[in-house]
Length: 145
Image 1 (spheres, rainbow, N blue to C red):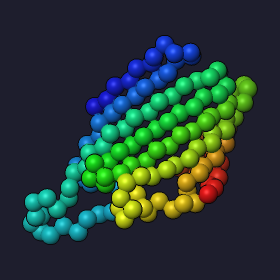
Image 2 (image 1 turned 30 degrees about the vertical axis):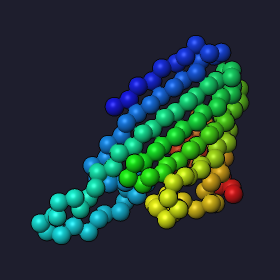
Image 3 (image 1 turned 60 degrees about the horizontal axis):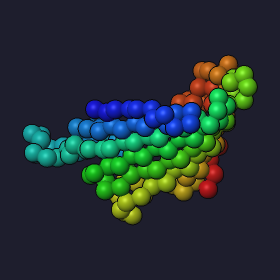
């Protein structure tokens, strides 16, 4: 369940919010299959609840900023991801610089995100869609500390 609204500020400030329910456990560990006794004990797989927020602002047609927040109630923490995007005319290539910062319990699920993935830069060529690395069609992603 969510909502979004664009406020009449400059070129428009986009605000999005969403409540996310995941009955299969954490979004941060989607490929972990819990060991479940047969028959399952009540409460073995705990559902997870999240709040997602996004703020986006276009300075002009070529450059924009974005802030994404994701808070997990079970994890007692989340992610903060600010980003700057520049689109080279005629919008065939774009450069995105972003950071990923976690907060919350130091021994929790989010502690497994290595520092080397804290900074990201990507170059996306819309004319090369489908020709990039797996998961990033037409994109090249560089990690930094």
